[in-house]
Image (tube, rainbow over all chains, first blue to last red; front, side, top):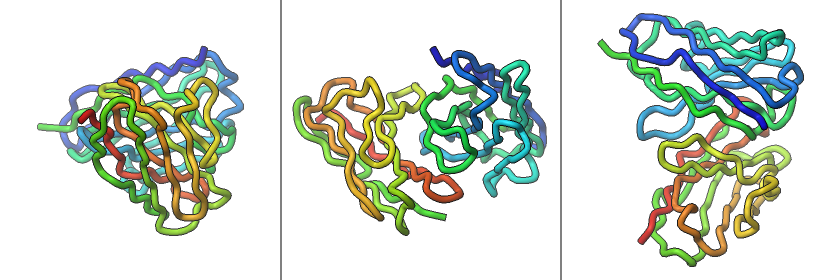
Length: 122
Length: 108
């Protein structure tokens, strides 16, 4: 059974930093690109970031580019999202997501974690 | 960037009725790489349909997807109580991957 379990969310002040982690199991982690998708309170879904299976290629939405860094450890089956210079508009539930296809782009998402909430507020 | 517009924003129906949800793209979606998701309150989204019309294993056959190019439809033949939720479309034919704004199917 595929499982994605996020952790690390919480309350942070504007300008602060937070590191999200995702622990994956139940599939061959090192052959799939992995992704982060977020959802602001009462809003729709926003594609945030992705990383190739080997970690050598990454993608960031314009809204987070330069502030967020995605990384993975294939030896531990973990995915991270380092978030810095956080803004109130980054407030959202952050989902760790597995792509249905192995490549970074051109994929839909067949498994989602339960999400970890991030609140940016003073 | 491909913008996906979902309509209607809210659909009020009764259990047993048919639901028809629309997703319109601002430009043609390459290879009809269009997916549909179901999101119940407080839950993560769940993939229903990929490639515009392919149902994920385990998804009931009352769900069906159709369409091509810029116009796509998700149909639910007979609404069950668990179908009252928000539905999102997503295109993955070109970068950046984008989602529609969602359609809420609520109980009348």
